[in-house]
Amino acid sequence: MVQDVNCHLSMANGQWSTTPQIGIHTHNDSEMAVANALAAVMAGATMVQGTINGYGERCGNANLCSLIPNLQLKLGYSCIAQHQLHQLTAASRFVSEVVNLAPDEHAPFVGRSAFAHKGGIHVSAVERNPLTYEHIQPEQVGNTRRIVISEQSGISNVLAKARTFGIELDKDHPQARQILQRMKELESVGYQFEAAEASFALLMYDVLGLRQQFFEINGFQVHCDLIQGKETTHSLATIKVTVNGENILEAAEGTGPVAALDAALRKALVNFYPQIATFELTDYKVRILNGNTGTAAKTRVLVESRNIQQRWTTVAVSKNILAASYQAVVEGLEYGLLLHFQAEN
Image 1 (cartoon, rainbow, N blue to C red):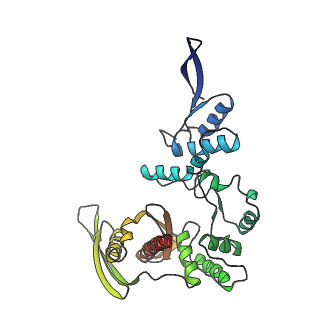
Image 2 (image 1 turned 30 degrees about the vertical axis):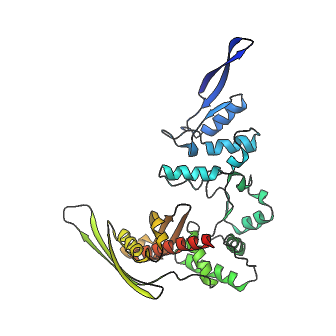
Image 3 (image 1 turned 180 degrees about the horizontal axis):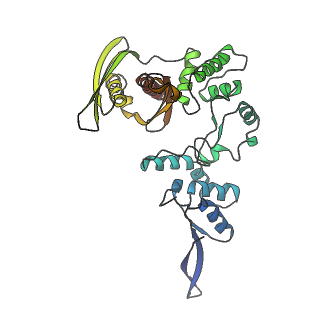
């Protein structure tokens, strides 16, 4: 541990006196920054230096998003006001946006997975008594409980997930079983909804007959040129889409086929849905599912999008990487529009 000593001057009985104040400044080179800072406070330190999300040189500094709730909720120290503690998750994600780094989903207290539950038994238990799997109430730090949909999911997960979207189902509801069956069928061909909850939400709305038809894609083409002697490619995408009964044909260029396709789709839709201008594609991942088939392999595409307030991820699977990319991009825009209109209502 490294200790910083700050001397605070004070006047007592007409005489200046010095009161040494012990502080702590730790780095995370050994994954011990938070632990060492907590130990220092318990040993008498009254000043702790750290950073939001632990950002800093080398392996980072002590993470205030872990330090503050541990000190205040676990050890009984008063660090910040209660209403400020409730804003800790929002502050963490705001700083991530400012520094243009994806938030750590597995960060303690403030990560999206900090209060996530996947197994059906876990979900059933936490619904009855959250203390079975949660060390604090997620709302204390401005976070929320998250029910994850995956290959381990049972009907309890589906019911709990539906409730997060304001839909009440019971285990005997035939459509609840249909949602679970449809999810299992898609997972058997390579889909994975654990990291793509936006796609699962659209699947659920589809089965329930609640999925809104914002637009209809009638076809698309992507043309790529490899420029001789240059590392970059030139891509042109053309898309046909119907919105409110009106047929639209648009084209756009991009540095790659997915960028061109995304640009063409936005260009076709933005006049009807201006809020699309605030949507941003922030991540694009491709996973080969059966590499032993070579270039005919099935691919899974994950697309992360965001607006000013939220992030969401969509997934698609196909032997054609462009088809999978197109579906994931389209669902990303569709889910963003769904969020917008739900917020308005």
